[in-house]
Every structure is written in C-alpha cells, then in structure tokens.
Image 1 (tube, rainbow, N blue to C red):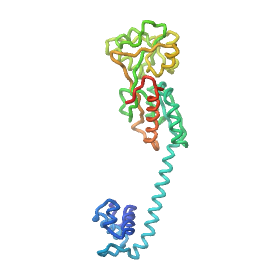
Image 2 (image 1 turned 135 degrees about the vertical axis):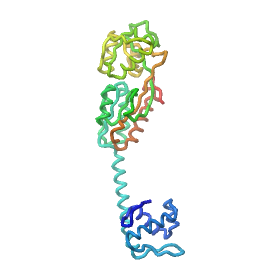
Image 3 (image 1 turned 60 degrees about the vertical axis):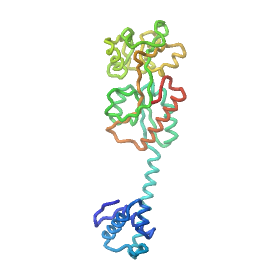
Image 4 (image 1 turned 90 degrees about the horizontal axis):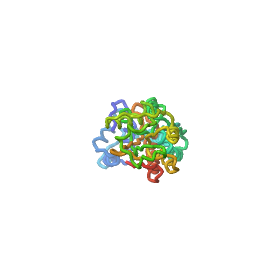
Length: 316
C-alpha cells in the first residue's frame, strides 16, 4: 500500500477508496484487496486527511459515501480508467517487440540456426526489423559490449563474466582432414594433435585458444599449416585441397563428409566438447520483450536439434 504524506494523493489510495465505495464495507474491501482491515482503514484515513473532508459515514452495517465521497468517486473512476488505458497501450506497444533486433552468431551456428530462428521471430514479431550478423568470437563479443548486437549465439568462451548466458547445447569437436589421409580413422586422440598440420584462425580467436590449450595439456605445441581468419567454408576448401587439417564441430562439415569431400574424426582421450550459448551483454539495457525473444530462439534451436538437423548436437 502507498505511504504518501497527508497532502499527497496516490493511485493506490484512490483504488482502495473505490473498492470500499463499491463494497460498502471496509472488511469486504480488505478481502478483495488482499490486505487487512487496519491497512485499508489507514489508507482511507490518509485520503480523508489529504482532502480535509470525510468521505464515508461509518455505521455498524458498513460505510456510506458522503457528498464529498460521491464527488470523488467520479474522479477516482476516471483515474482508474486512464491508468488501465495506459497499461493496455504499453502492453500493446511492447507486444510488438523492438523496432529493430540484431542477432549475431558464429559461422557454424549461423548456417545451422538462422533460418529457423528468423522464421520464428518474424511470426512472433512481424513489425520488428530483424538483422542477422555472422562473425568470429572476438569481434562478436566486441559488438555485444558496444551494443551493436542485441543477442548472440556463440561457443561459450572460458571468460564470460561480461555476458548473461543461457547454455543451449553442446557438441563434440572433430578433426577434419582430406579424404586422402587414409591413416586417420573415425576417432583421433588429442595427444597426437601436434603431429597434424592444422589450419586455424589467428591467436585472438576462441578455436585457436582451445587448440593451443589441448596440445599444451599433453606437453606439445601446435603444428600450423597456415592461419585462416576467413569463414569456415574457406577453411574447409583449404582442407579439401590438401593444405592441412582443421578443427570444427561435425555440424559444420556433415554435408561435405556425406559427399565424400572431407573426412571427420571425433577427438577422444578426452572427448572435446564445446557449449553453444545464447548471450546478451550485462552492461547494456535489454531490448523490449527480451524474455519472449530468448524463448523463441531457444525453442527454435531445440527444434533443430530434435529434428536431427544439427548433427552431433546434444541439448542441455
């Protein structure tokens, strides 16, 4: 209940007054408002003090409006109606979603999920201008922090304190090689990675950091065939041409493996997994209807995984 001073009027006090006026009873009004009788009595007394007049005649059978009370009823109903109209207008506005929504994702995730997410969000928020952006981890994190991107789908970085994250799934990392490398079987031990000439992004990117950490745990160093900060498509093309191998989730290479253009071996001893998360920046204000947007994205990803269209992914 409101705690205004003797000279103040509040919408809560007026709502309480209307409830008492409609029920003709302090006790019945208290039941409707979910308050105790003493609280309702204090609100009415505060309102009477603010207006310097009696609003009710009290008797053993309840309360009856005074002339001043009858006058106030009309104004109180007008205030209640105006507030209801304001709430409806605001709800209608926010239900339309944000004027613009920018969603970013790392390449493999974008290729797998953007179509489904776009369909779901356009159905839910047809008035929203939707923009998709693809990028590697480092610039993507910068876009989030700068407010250039509202929501991101990314492989969860080890340091993510600046992000609010919702982990969606996990998938195994695989060694992707030319089909001519007949010595590579369906799985490949992590300890042997230093023996493989790898095509990887430069040092600032998450996949490179992950790869260096894997070989360092076994006392080794990466053998780089070349660095490639271009798209996964370029990296896979380089592997096809025999320039080296690379590390990618199976979803990124499933089509080419099925076509016989690439070979994929699951990393083992230990199995290496990466988690895909839905992220927003902690230091930025939320877009309207963010919860609803996040739920739509989560459900879209879930549907993709459940349908088998995200090979190698497991929901968490």
